[in-house]
Length: 518
Image (cartoon, rainbow, N blue to C red; front, side, top):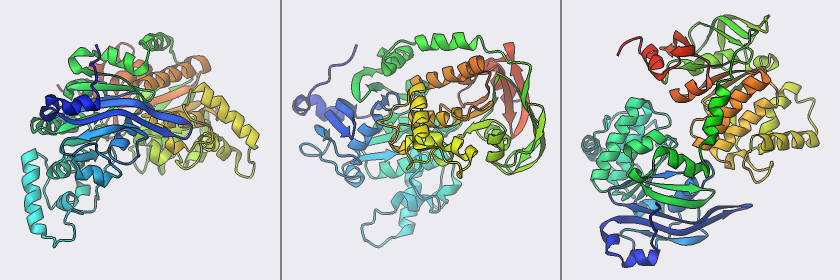
């Protein structure tokens, strides 16, 4: 059952407020042109609590966080923060920080060229003389007390992503934050780094810090969280203790429906069989970033590269597409020898590529949804043969409908869409070119479970109904097993195994990655 959410007035009069509640948001409204992003949303955070904020892309999570941190002005509702007299009016991230609200984003916002200590204390001396020896001593004390494996004089850029995030958290803790917001903190971390971060989160929880945890990894939610708030389409679905909301019910509430889609996915997956015709074949292919490897994919096949972060899976597909400088190898497409040294060569050969980093290599944020969708096809036609505006609008409309892209219009800047919808726009871009072979590198990273299922279903339908050959890469082994009929296992940028049929189990994948060791 959903907990009854008390009003701000009741909260203020409640004794429980003084003991437990560190943050209360009530009736929060936020509108943007053409859409209502938040509709009377309530959220409560208690001291010493890890509270997961869940919802599909576009559910309103990011908007709620931005309202709380002063990035966006709310259009209605009220915010109460412990220690602030009356209602809190937050107009900027600095004001949020001043009243004890700190945010650590997925993309590190610190300065990698500065030391750990400089990152922890820069901008905090308020015109006073800077005594860096004292700051370095203080930084080392904080890092040690929190168990952060870094030294004050160490350059931040030489630390792992996990440690950089922990330094950002240490900075927030030293500034006496009461509310710590972690926005997708684990999306680029390996399992060991995730556990390191979780250890720090539990330590802060024991110190009474309230933590808002935003993530798309459901297993991680259940490993570390105490409570879950679910948003859907800008509205509150409910707030639940973790023990009262099984994972399957969480997914149903996020999506607003039951998981019939998963059954459909499994049914489609059972039909996937590769044809005899070889679509792409490489012998001793290598690039500036990859070691030589052999690779083949058949018509209608969905295969995948799997391995730990840094194993070489992304480097391998970038070599196939010519995204990195190709240094050797022989390539055949449909039995004919081709020379692919740059992405345009691959596109002309009928190959499409959705990159791992959609923000850096995929979308052009300032261009419209329409312009992003038609980009690859226009490149193939050549810019001296421009499409008419009518053609572009028809193509954009077709794929916005086909992929259920949520956008106010095709003229909306793609950078303003949710991550899942940005990913669909890049998919639309390549589907418009009708490739014979499509490479999808982390197509579901950082997007909600509903959109993940949509993309998985689309991949399998493209293979079974249109005989498209697809290479699918995901950090989630379960997702790979669900979509691929053949897995190429990598370690240290070498192919160390290939799994098919009954070998496609999580245990087999892990054993092959580990080289047969326990």
